[in-house]
Structure formats: structure tokens, C-alpha cells
Image (cartoon, rainbow, N blue to C red; front, side, top):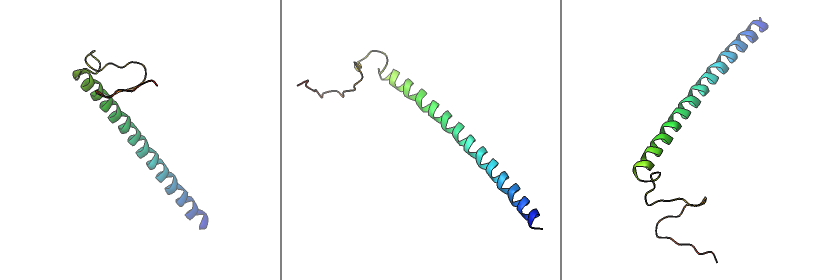
Length: 74
């Protein structure tokens, strides 16, 4: 009788693990889709605000500077 209960517990534990793996997979897929949409919108917004079209903001090197702040090389 104990073997049957152990087998049933093992089956339920396996079903629970499978369901959790499915939920985690769906969550990862949704997170990737949302991240892609946010990145796409960021590119479009940057383009319309002259981030990529060569307007006021030009990136030189690998640093970002805000307008109006100057740094010296001393």
C-alpha cells in the first residue's frame, strides 16, 4: 500500500514540475517579447527626437554627456 501512495506522490510531483516549467517558459517568452517591443519603441522615439538622425546629440567615443556640462582633461 505504501508503494502505491509513493507512486501517486511521485506522479503529482512530476506533473507539478512540468506545469512550473511550462509557466516559466511562457513567462520567459513574454519577457522577451515585451523587451523587444520596448527596444523597438526606444529606437523609434530616439529617431524622431534626433537621437539617430544626426541632430544635436552626437556620440563621440563611448561616453555620454548631457547638454551644458563640460569636463576637463586635467
